[in-house]
Length: 195
Length: 342
Image (cartoon, rainbow over all chains, first blue to last red; front, side):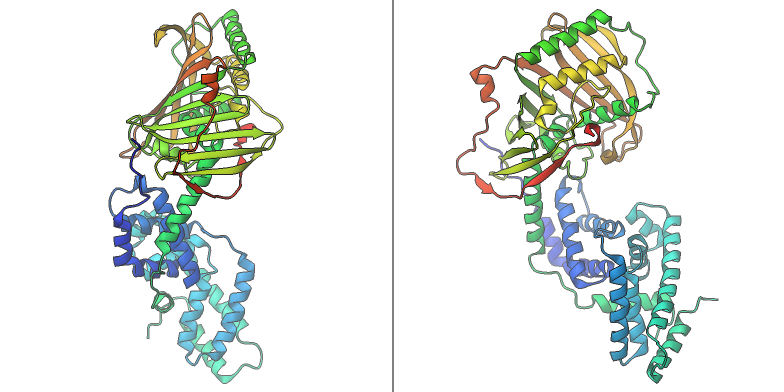
């Protein structure tokens, strides 16, 4: 008699996805920077979860999240960073022109600029400032020291400030409109280093 | 409105992710991809099964390779008389002579019970051996054909793999009794021109059938013996056969996928006192920094039989697809041999 087929996963995963799927998807989108990439990231995490089913003993969601975060931190997908940066800056400039609210522009821009950070810094920023994990929790999730997390967060924020400044300059060529001038002013105010 | 950078980031990501819902069918797509990937890997047979058959053996190779690259083992076995030149010559001659008669070499390998860390892809096949499913593999090899059967701890067959090789081309066939499907893919062997034996006992790493051929085994053992890291540990009866026990100097190595730090290796080989052919090989990895729930020590035992090329022995090298099994169609893959073969 042959042994019974061993399913790659039980109903637990389906139950988890039914109950917490949207939250997981949000986390994936946050880490990846877009919905399409978020979907790919989440699927990659699910695949890894299915492959490592023997190692999952408790807390399926925690395990899946850990995979998700680590995939993101490890730069699960390599891209042409230069091209993407250029595209982001350009699209950001055009998007800003069409946006009626400068502060909304800036939030949107920051999210886009976030995508330019190295994967680990980006993941740390998302976990610390969006998922509201403490440095200790983030360190546990990513399997590194608390100091490394603090350092990555600090460098990430600093880099974001730099990128935002560059974004502001790129978006404000000579002969800018009054609204752009307002935006620049607001951006400069918001992105000042805390004293 | 919040005016700190952190708050802006938070609000921005909130805005980005708002309304994101789980795409329909994402879990099914993931399952399908894993299944396809698994079948691809399984179908590589030699690349996977040879690893799985002797997972710990890979580590041995790593250790001995490191040793040959200049790493001196930190600990050594208790002093025993070194094998005489005559004994080494007898072992070499016996294996070479046996290889010349083109036997079917059978290696039955038993893995430790329980869960042990598994290596990442492309060695995921090891999971079947190391992840608590398969406990035993039986490998048969002759010429450019390699067949491996996998059994669980109750003795039920779980998987059959067959790999053939002709130059850089070959075919990999896998029958999976768990999912009741079978796969056949062309294999593109990435064959390195130069094959470098190391100070190891067996060609236990992943590789093409040729690497597993008795002739290569003879070459490997000869080289290992020539490395001078082997001692005669005494005489012992193994499965009713009077044997000479050869203990290899222990070494230190790091097996990346175990993620448990460095391991100390212990290797022992028993050769027939009359035939001078390998009878048993035992490899043990002991991890200083084993994770909770993981065994501190992983032992893999391989028993050798040199079968004359009779009809029944040659039949071991054939794979018959059971009726009713679904045919899965993964893509062609390229098998890259490890650095050892570079």
